Length: 255
Image (cartoon, rainbow, N blue to C red; front, top):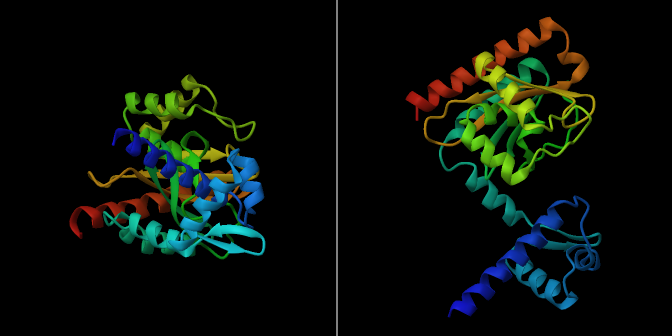
């Protein structure tokens, strides 16, 4: 029985690797490319794809395999477990409308940041923060806000697990540099991202006090040129603070 259990876990891991590879290719991924990318036998990939397709987790298009809408069903359920998404969503819609920018909600899970909702204003730029996308926490204002809400030991564990890889020349890549910025974020209540994940993109974020529900943060994302003027930065931090306060009060007393 012990051997059968090990075989079952390994098979599940293979399916997850296939799903992750498909998720990285928005246009679809042919089976031959999956075989090459994952260094697996063609017969193995084929059996997993057939099973995943039977359960609606992948679909086969002309351009290759894509994630099936069943994944959206799972993701939609996961983000609604504790009520944070339901409370934050309408407030982020208002935030995006009032600023014209992108307003984002991120949850921390297993030391990564997961985009769970993005509201788009009429001036918003088109970015890659799609539903369910994972990001290194140290590369975003959302992620740094989340890290600042954790104790230092927890932050150290995340760094040990995932490292501090550079996304741009502006990314913080040293432990001392990150902790120095986290100290400032804890003092001011806000985190900033100035081209640390994507060139030309700026962001201001703040953590949410959700009680014991989950680690969450919200942000306003904008072209860096619109964030750098002091008056705009003050305006965005003020409205972000107001939005966070509404969400926190509702979670504390309205749920």
